[in-house]
Length: 134
Length: 141
Image (tube, rainbow over all chains, first blue to last red; front, top):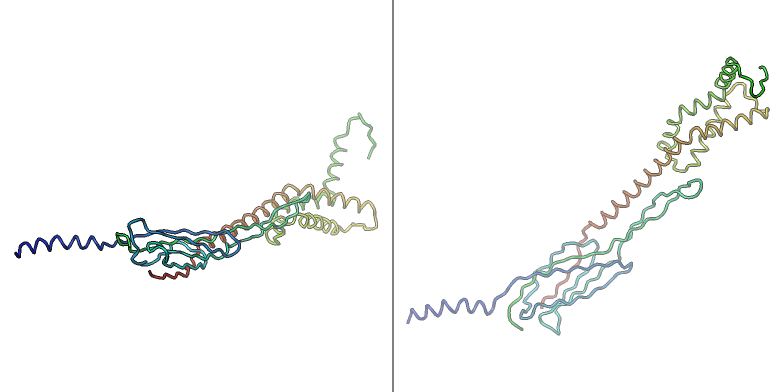
């Protein structure tokens, strides 16, 4: 009797663990804007089929050259999806006066040379997902 | 000096005397001085005074030549020939100094261009590599 119970217990532990198996996953997102006005971008991220979002652990920012705002909210219509709303500040324009020569007397003038630096944001979302539909 | 007609051989002594007379004139000395010191003049205008406009250098050399001509004790401002000679010397001095002056000026402008472009590249790189932390809000499901 006790031996049978022991075998059942050994089998039950891994089977039970598999049923509630959680896995840590990551997803990387890149946003870029070259607009001269603030830009708002929405992105819906859904987990692969057969996975259910348990929680968002943390967000690692890999690159951000402006003070952007990121809002990550669960999608009410689909439990394995999240909505990301990113507000990007306007792209920066850096201008310098570059001397150039013009005219018959080679008069030196200064021309504005501008370079637009796009606002970029790259981050990785670390989340925990569970196998099995919601 | 004896008059010579075309085709008659020139006396070597006469030719030497004429050349010596030309090179020993005050104007020739002014041109020699300008030619000798044009390097210093270019450095003074382009590096020390940082003039990047070419006409400022041209005016500077012309004024300097004229100033040297004024230092002549035998300068006769009433004489028309003195003014003619002075104008010719100023024009000659501009022609004489033009290669070195043009080179110095183009180098000066090129350096200004390079410095401005390097500053632009530095500013762009700084702005691209700057890290500004975003504000992240996560609403947990």
